[in-house]
Image (cartoon, rainbow, N blue to C red):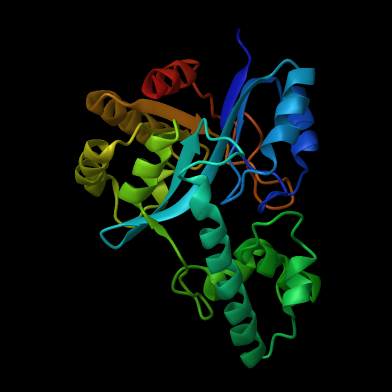
Length: 281
């Protein structure tokens, strides 16, 4: 049996718990032979992860995860084969991170107004990289005992529609796709289950994005049921794009997803990588 494939992993350069090097070590321990690092809005963990992957003989794919919107619908987009070097998409990343920083400061102020005594410095202590976001605010709330976990912090407070939620700078999905393609990247819609609406709405959305240059759908996500994985795979192949997947691992203390296998039943097919490569070509 071939090794595991995991194309959705996060390090502490964004909101993961582990350094890029340790993340690769854990992937090797889990039996992963092909992996992708896709931190939020940052690329600066790629070189470290690639070096560690080479030492463990793991096939490494560089990437990033972006928050985008399409006709008012928010979603996440993974972009594979994007490097930490000048390029059309890379030129937008500082703007995206600045939007995060502005939102973070306002969310902290809103929390203060509700009686939660945290500062932006408390938040920054939890961030090891340039990408600082709501998970780090959640960690600061856990630290002062206001909540017991990140999940509890999001429920009611930080989630979309929560008491202190604020929106931020986002690329449109079509712009993100165009910038990705211009730099040789392959854009993939991440974990469609989290998109507002439901499976019945996916078809029209994906049709529009494929026309714009979408290269794949993350069908095999840890949070998807086997039935949804099959449905999304069929949809991707009907559209002539890649059906990819991964655990969305952030760290054992943050979420019950394990590297390579998600909650235990995930198995990303080897074809995910060959389909991604075909989209790149």
